[in-house]
Length: 220
Image 1 (cartoon, rainbow, N blue to C red):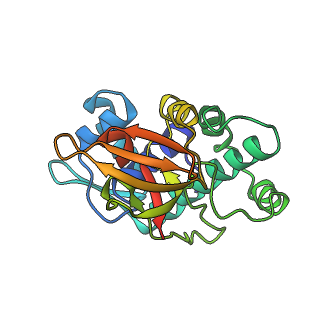
Image 2 (spheres, rainbow, N blue to C red):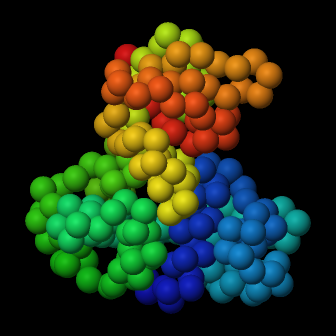
């Protein structure tokens, strides 16, 4: 099934908002994600419903169908593979790749994506630590926890970020936190939930609760 670029973007947004297809999504949430008006969302939902990639009943929310999830994962796969290519082969910074990958993800060539995957030696994660679905749509997730939920004196390794906006990634660069960095929780402030962490056993960093909640680690 061929979808338009706009339909692919909406379907991918619904997939992410539904926490990988496990729950219903409201029209208002989709409008906020797509930065558009609810009336425009309703028009698109009718189109996607006609193509049977979502189920939509007014006032009851939106659910992604099995076919819709399959197509959304194909788009996610392409996006994340292109991000790896841009960082590893073209020397883009990790805060520069999202918008470019947003355009490249709509190329309709399964053979190109198969060869891109092979060329990159079948990466499992993108530059932001998100898992890359394989060609069958299987996702190899790994257990991870926001560092604000780790206990004092607990250590771990940063493996992903929930916020991949350019502004957040530039902040990560500024404080020396990166995918693969070792971290240890030195202190947690009861008043506002902020944390003090040690990065790579050499740099103390103070972070707000919101920042720390967007950094995911594997505990060790």
